[in-house]
Length: 340
Image 1 (cartoon, rainbow, N blue to C red):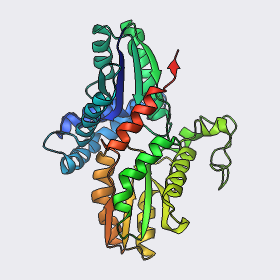
Image 2 (image 1 turned 180 degrees about the vertical axis):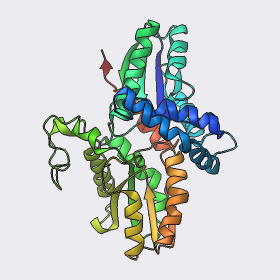
Image 3 (image 1 turned 90 degrees about the vertical axis):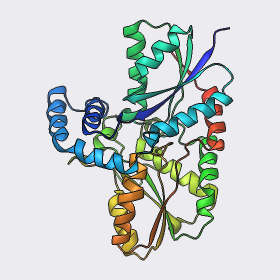
């Protein structure tokens, strides 16, 4: 019987904190049309302008959170891979990055050379977005098509509302929530509003204050913001949190376009000025700690919150390789549907 491989896919990281490596990584990331969804000439112009100054600033940020073993995202993803290999009995467990190394092309070619024919492709993103889930699937399809690889895929769908994922979030966060705190902020990665509008032929998204709560199943299946709110509400309900104990925000804005709100930066200021002293922050759009959690929230966010009047900001770690997450991911991947 042919082995059935599991391929975990995360976003990726620069090879090092050198400016040249960061520039190379940012160029690959930002030139993805699913990330910056502009026509190629405009995208190339915009990214070229961004790459004048941003690589040096990003390199400094990466250096502030870089581990001795390398990029935290890569190190933590490898730990998850190792834990999943012990749990996944059907075949090898591999790890690829959508940007940087190890690339999807390298890993898929290696699996095919080993005689693997069936791969469960697991984009490690709880909520759906073109800039995460779709780009992973399309890149895998491109590699198989251009390299003529004899591979068939099952694909892990977004799991934002799956009990296994939500229970793992609760298990991993519980030690922090059992401590004394004033407020919990669930900070999800942001997206430009146009990313939501273009996936919504019904023109329902962002048309009212309750649009995410009243989204039809068809809209919900492709609406990142609605899925984030569903994750947050289900998580809070599992812990019995009162409405005033928690809130949601969206981080990591880039450029001048309107992004989904409320913005995390604004929320940190508001909470500090409202008298919140002990703040917990979780980032449920990420399953592994990375620059967006460790540096953007854990360093800059903490400084901002304190400047606004807060006393302490505790970053709750992502799922990383928590045993409950390993068990949940195994269960979710085992029932991933076939992508024809």
